[in-house]
Image 1 (cartoon, rainbow, N blue to C red):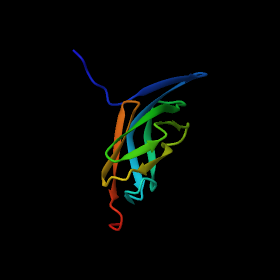
Image 2 (spheres, helix red, strand yellow):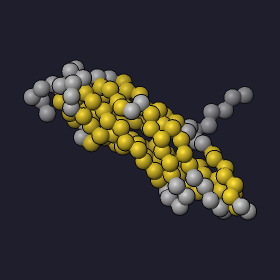
Image 3 (cartoon, rainbow, N blue to C red):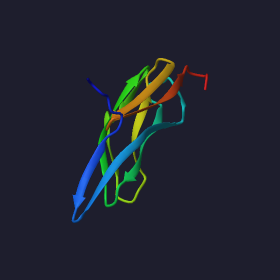
Image 4 (cartoon, one colour):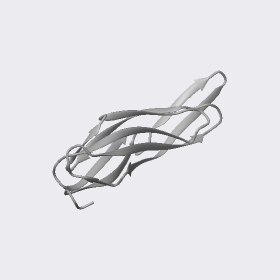
Length: 129
């Protein structure tokens, strides 16, 4: 039997304490959500991982989030490293979506650490902002 897990558990031992970090969600946001389809306009993509700390002790969550694009656009970089330090409930990283000269809907998807999230940006023809 195969079971798919949607979360990543990381166990760290520091002295006499052990902590277990569990990433709960991955959220992608875009600013702005509409850009011209001119091959040079950009939207800032923010990738945020949220965490809950289980058990007693100290835990840090780290993971690479791989980014992919569906539609008329490109994203850079193609992966980001998110670290949620001990005592924090979230961590984030940034990427940039660049339009092509074709109008349409661009979906940027982040995938890593057993988590997936996405955001959509619309690229509009010139004069239709």
